[in-house]
Structure formats: structure tokens, C-alpha cells
Length: 323
Image (cartoon, rainbow, N blue to C red; front, side, top):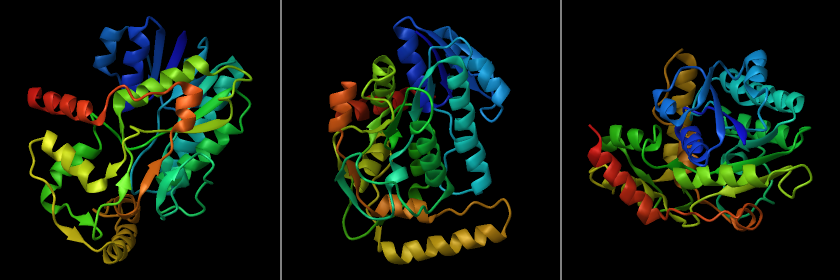
């Protein structure tokens, strides 16, 4: 299969490229700067911005399918910046797929349905949120709706809190802020996460099963470990893998949420300053968000190959070998 992976040099995108290359596929990537780790995989790198429709069309040309991982992520930032990448960039990918006859696996996020309340064991019938605390989930919801209503065979995957070796998001921030980390609420809320290789497996499974008229077309799927755990349990497991003492201090969620709102308003008045705490982060740390993945098991044949315990063992080994 001739496949383009947008954001192929990113955390999940690179894992997808490794999966595809390992089975002998022809892999192309689209991202803004060269990634040396893709060279041994034999990947053809297209250096361009997903916001450039001509460049996207050129990268998609000749490909049978696209895995769209490229996105602007973050807990804070200007709406316009997120919209240009997550919505306009996705529209460029969708239009290029329509022109070239390619099918599309779109990487979305469970945050598109998170409205600030507990989500406990919900499936894909839960509606999109009607309010969003940040531009990231808002624009990801817009992008997912665009893809699922689009003119090409497409499926949206919603991997949740992707972690593992090479994670550039969660673990580095937890470690860097370990002296300022607090758990919220009297007790842990239950959450889902997914190990990066399991999320990559889901992308490849979707590629293999996505055809015109298949049950996957126009549908979204939650992708997780299938092992819900407490938020603090997950944070401390990652910290333990890094050799960092656990977080035990707790604060009530309500006052912290108010403080986050104040910090965001201050940031709005100070150009270029990103608040250390946001309402989006508070919601993620103080509410339950775990999901029923029966549909992914049924329609994609998805089975998390790497358990939480095995993933943590791999992460620990990776970090112990890092320079």
C-alpha cells in the first residue's frame, strides 16, 4: 500500500510509519522539517506545511490512503492558530484525498466530546461537546465533523492520552514540573490512556479495513488501553518510570479551576505569555474520562497488544538507556 502519513515525524506519526514500513509498504510523510529517524525506514519525506493546499495535494498524489496525524496540540493558545492547522489543514487533506481518490484515516481526540463533566464508560453515541475550554478540542471537533461528512471514505480515531517511549508531551512536563504538581479533588477520577504502539496499530487496522461502503466509513472510534485507572495512578506510574518520586499532594478542584481562569485572562493581556495552568488542564485532571472500546474491537479488530504493565516496563527501559 502506498500511504501518506501527515505529521509522520511526530510521536504517533512516527510509530505509524514504523508499522507501515515494517510490513513493506511505500510510506510518504508530510511535515515542515526533516526527521532523520525516518531515513532508515525508507520513507519519502515531503517538507511542507499542511496549511499549504498545493503542497498537500502534491504529497497525496499517487497515494492510496492517508493517515492524518498532523495537528496543533496544546492546552492554551489563539483560536486562529489552532483553526489554521486543525481545521483548514484538515480541509486541505480532505480535498486532496477527494481529488486523488485516496481514503482517509483521521486522528482525532476524545476531547471532542468532553464538556467538563464525568465521562464514564461512554461509547461513540455520546454527542459532541457544546462548550470547550480551549481552542484545541474545539478545532479538533470541527475537523472531525468535516472529515466524517466529507466526500471520501474516511474514519476518525480518537486515541486518548498517548504515552510511551519518545513521548514529547506528558512525561517531560510532569518531570519538569514535579515540584509544582498537585492532584485535584479528594480522590482520583478514572481515566483512559493508550500506549503509542497500540494507537499506531489502530491506525493500520483502520487502513486495512477502510473501503468504500465499509462499516467504518463516516464513523469515529475511541482507542484506549482498555485498562482504566486513576489519574494520579497514571501520573505516578510515568514518574516512577523516570525515577521521580510520586505526587501525593492534593488540592480541591474548584478553587484551582477559578485560578486557571484568572491566569488565562492575565495571559490574554500579556502577549506571548502562556499560563502554567489552564481550565482545559484542570478539567482533564479532575474529571473522569474513560471509554467503551467495544466498537473498535468489533469493527477494527483492535486489541491492545501492549498492556499497561508492559508499556511501563518498556518506558522504564527506554529512559534508563537515554543519555
